[in-house]
Structures are given as C-alpha cells and as structure tokens.
Image 1 (cartoon, rainbow, N blue to C red):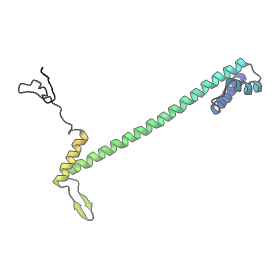
Image 2 (image 1 turned 90 degrees about the horizontal axis):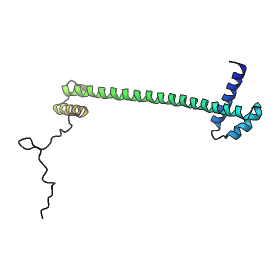
Image 3 (image 1 turned 90 degrees about the vertical axis):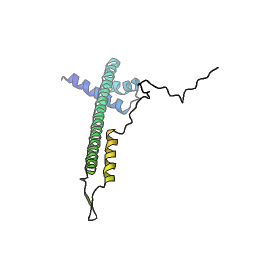
Length: 157
C-alpha cells in the first residue's frame, strides 16, 4: 500500500467513525469539519464520504450476519433440546405402557396399573396424531354422496 492509499484509508475510516457516531450528519458538516483539516477539494471529500458510507454498510452487514448466526445457533439448540425432551418423554411413556416403569417412592415400589398403562398409550397416540379424526363423506348404500337434508331449505311457491 502506498502512502497515499494509507492516508486515504485512514480518512475513510475517520469519516466512517464520524458517520457512525453522528448518523444524521450532513455533507456540509462533514465538509466543514474534515475539508479544512485535510485541505482537500470538495470532490475528494465527497469521494471519501461515499467510501465511508460503503464501509459502514459493510460493517452493518457483518454485524447482522453475526447476529443472525447467533440467533440461528440458539434456535437450533432449542430445537435439539425440544427433540430430546420429546424423545425422553416418549421413552418414559413407552416404559409405563409396557409396565416396566417401576419407581421407588418412600420405600415403596410403584408399579403402573392398567389404567396408568392405558393413559400412557393414549398420550402416545395423541403425540403421534393417531387420535386425529378420520374425515369420511356421508354416502348411501351404493357409495353415492348424500346431501345433508337438515340444512337444506327449499321454498316452494
């Protein structure tokens, strides 16, 4: 990098920092502050402002990508934890449904009763969607669709 490029890069960074701190700063303010300091033409300062804005946009995109990556990572972890808990719950319910879940509470062995096993099976069915109602059309003995006569109002004149 030549000395001119280093100086230009420093100036771009300086204006980028100024714009980041003062997002509502106008072109006139920037020219007044930095134009006299650097003793450069208006056109050069405009070019530096343009590059500084690009620099800030790139910085903002990097921040947003990093933020998105953190959000995606945390969402994945939450999904994995939810899947683990669902699998753990399924395992516990299967043990109860099979009658193998023997627990010791206050020096007493608790063995699942038939009603416990039935409730565990019912809960497993709910989790897998086996309780979803089957939608069937009303048909006559030949398999033709039947119109619901209760809701049909026909006026005869």
